[in-house]
Length: 471
Length: 70
Image (tube, rainbow over all chains, first blue to last red; front, side, top):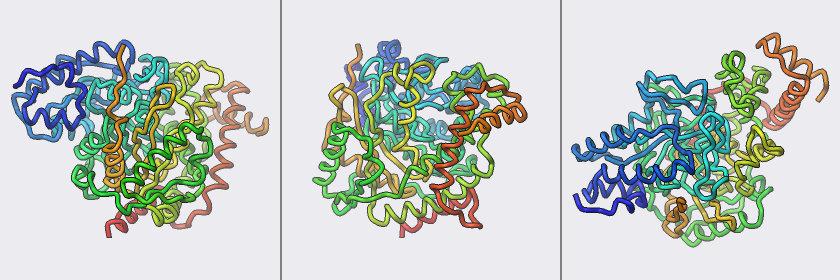
């Protein structure tokens, strides 16, 4: 082992950390200690962890150093949203109701990360039961955006976004039902991938909506996200909704040329509410992609408003079905905003719920024909408005919060309903110092294509290299 | 949204779940249900008689993936 200034190690990307470990440029213990030292400083400000287990992490790191493993993530410290079960450990799901429940199974995604040699430093804060897009949590405290104190980190994978952006861990898993990976990735300046429905096993992950839930990575770079997807993707006998579709080598295809690739810029729906500052940043990102050889094609997409509504209807019905017993027996154990969000689900007629699900296949076929018949990848905003402060979007107190809450997910949720892969890519900072970004949407199971576009964009830009300053 | 709708929410909540909603809360829920109903009923279009809720969607997803790989 070489003598290394461990304070610099947290600046490495996940891929560089993994490669450095393989070369024995530093040890997993040094890497882990660097993360733990940074967590000590950041956690009081950001509140992104629900639990931290330094001794377990150091033990794992020593074992990794002794084993000198060759796994894709051997010795790399990670942490994940506190909703992936690990046998013998509590997964709170960000809730009071589950805060003492010890898991009796281990999530497939955690098993796969273990097999790849990854370490787990702790568990990350999240919206209660993954129901919220802001980062508020009345039970464990609000998570804070590392770029600006008092601002929303996005949710529901709030801790995953804040912890990775603040360089506390090298990557994290989140879950995305209506945008819960892509939104915190956007607000925290990260790459965040929602894989195709069925690409990644959900066994052992807390459910919110069976029809829309997807497990995906948040990482500093698109390449890091590709590495994480490589490890967790693929069919799982424990999850009958995971599909037997071949998993390509994402890092091999990530450098492919964009020459001739058609990238669609929607002329309707997505730009309806966008301000000039965000519009200019999106246009600038398209200019970079054009320089790389992509053909930018203006395209009118099918009306997504009904999809947004159908997604809401299905999500509400399924989430409420999951929570019905607790809603009746333990209503006061939920945050008020979380509970009231679900209550309408108690009255959605079964016929309407089934109708929305029956239409899903036809709507997907129509969308794919209209969009992917013309372009290879769709480029859209992730969020259309300025990043809100935690105070102004507090679902339990702020006047006007409901109006802000309704703005989340408009650009992300339709693709959840369609089951399509979608990736958030950072694309600059607004005048108030907060990150912005764009969303790339691909054909079913074509994660490689959107990772390719996002990675080549990052090769030409340096937004992803900037780190928030810790006080 | 009618007062009848809010009242119906209150009655159903009590009958099915044993929950007592205030008139104001029942009214909010009824309004949300009406909004969802209007947007989804008129927006998504007709459904083929033979389409299944979940398997149909997954079949389309896989069929599209197969088309792309050819």
